[in-house]
Amino acid sequence: MSQIGKQHQTYISPFDRIILMDICEKYLQDARRALKSSMFSKPDPVEAIRSYEGAAQCFENARNFERAAECYVETAEMVQRQDPLKAAEMHERAAACMERAGASPKEYYLRAADVFKDHAVTIYRDNPDKGLQLLQRAADDFEKGGDTDTAVQCYEVGAKASLNRKDYLNAVVFYGIAGQHFEKRKEYKKAVKYYHEVAKLWDIQKVPENVAENYLRMASCLEALKELKYASQFYTNAGEKYEQAREIYKAAKAHEKAAESRESEEGFLDASQSYKTAAELIKSLKNMEKFEELYGKAADCYVKAGKPSEAVELRLALTEIFADDSYRCSKHFEKAIASVEDDPHLKGELLRKQGDVLLGIHDYLRAARSYKEGAELLERMGEPAKDAFKKAGDSYVLYFKSMAKVKNQEMMQEGQESAAYCYEKAGLTEEVEKVRQQARPDTKEREKQIAEELERLREDFEKGLLNRLHYQQIREAYQDLLKNLKQ
Image 1 (cartoon, rainbow, N blue to C red):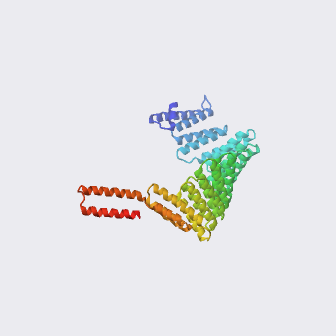
Image 2: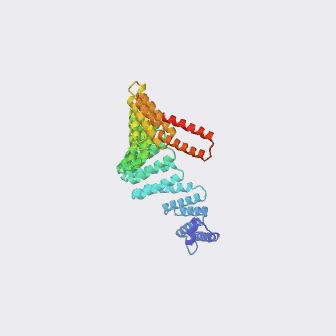
Image 3: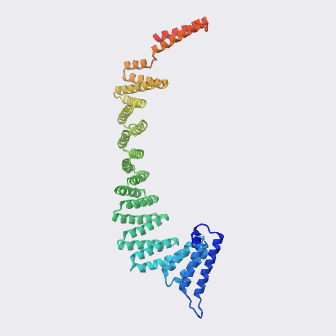
């Protein structure tokens, strides 16, 4: 029998099922017999109850859930007067069996809930803990039975009763379940009310992490209500509480959510502050990619708020942090420069700084372009630009030399032509000539190559591999090339 019972959660063979059904019928026969009276015996309700409950459990093991539910209900009706709480438990089991049979369990959950609620009030006077347990069980059954309003009333009564006893943990449970219930039903205002009560109770007990979690729930509900101003405030509050609890990652995420909420309602200045707070917290966790993202968002919000100088400050901080990464460094300089288009003096200063940083990490081409753009800007403004053009020219020369090492003719030409242009703009004619000289090929090496080729041609002619006419034509062409190289 014990082995058969173990199988009721998985597979029951036809043979085992027959055995179980025989046992179930035996229990039912015992129950009917116990209820009958005769000349020699009186009805034995206790034995009948035991047999009906045994039959119910047996039918449940055999997966005959409808018959199991009937037996549990029969048991409940028999014990209702003597032991109402046991009757309520039997109704709960009946409800569970009805669910597994695919039928509605609501009637039986509600029957159980009524009993638990009535007895919770009575028992609470002498045994508050037991009374609150029954009240919570009643609330659960009311909710399962579809009477959500009464379920919430039970949660409220349980929370207030717990508060009167300064039993904050039980109060948290009751208020928390009520909040979750209303959130599921999308009654967000009521959910916020109960989550706030939970947050206050955790605050009294000085558990900042739990306070933060309920602030997050409140913020999420307020977002659903499109109350973004209040939502962002509670996200911020959650972030601060997580900081108290030293939950740095969670704190950063909460501040980021606050920033997103503020940004969506165009509170760009407040959003930038929240992004900065989140960024600094993330930086302490050494997550530099996320830090870069958040600082960048803060800078963008400063621009939208009409505070370009603050945006530039953040972008420059990023260029210093990522100074060894030319791509990221240039990206942040470009963002900073784009944010100050209306301020040509500041733009020119940023272009110079960009050039200095890129030159320091040997990114000669980008450095040269930055210097050149800055120089042309000064020129348009009517300000002295000689030094700026010279810096651009010097950087292009460095770029030209680096390309010469890898024999990239196209890039060498770009470097040479741009360097010459910048030196001309700076009025440095000697430097222009030097650049042009550097751009010319090594004539001695070329002369040597031509001489070797002429010697090879002569040997081919003497061996008869080349006729006189062709030999003379090729030799004259090489000799003309030598004359041009020596000029």
